[in-house]
Image 1 (cartoon, rainbow over the protein chains, first blue to last red):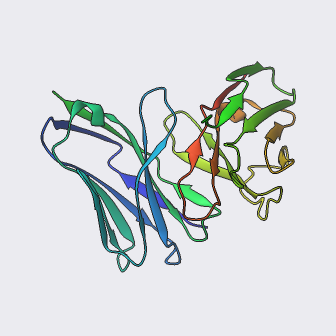
Image 2: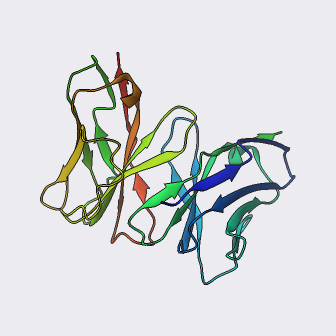
Length: 111
Length: 114
């Protein structure tokens, strides 16, 4: 089955700096890659997603890039703010029925 | 409107007992997912329902785990003869049609097996 690896497991950045989280996947058939944000004690929420026919997608300070050849995708957060502090999960799916998640990245934005 | 709800929020059970976890999806959502989140781990996919049907049950960790969904709405995840390694947060999510659409997560059930 699909295997998703996520790095780094923890990340600390100064407020205003950029943060980058990377994920790799094993199954070249995967074609949908969502990113979820989970704040402490809260449920995961979708922040951005990308499909395999697109190389990059942006939404304000958040962007996701996809390299199908290398089978990796990344989350980019610019101008980080303290409220960006959370655990971020990447995921991959082939059919939209089964989702394989990474182990999460705990992001801390230092004011 | 109401979001995804799960009950109980916390469950402590003795090893060997059976437990039943409940998920109420957002009204009208046809797709429903169960995940397990162990401490410091990602979300482990367990099972997916489209309507009342679960096309693929291969994500369930063992035959002690089963799930059903009735009326295209409420779902229950049952764990028989619980083991300590079953201790985790069990999350349910629903999606309007499934596939490549946003999943809305419930608050989870924290299961502790003593």
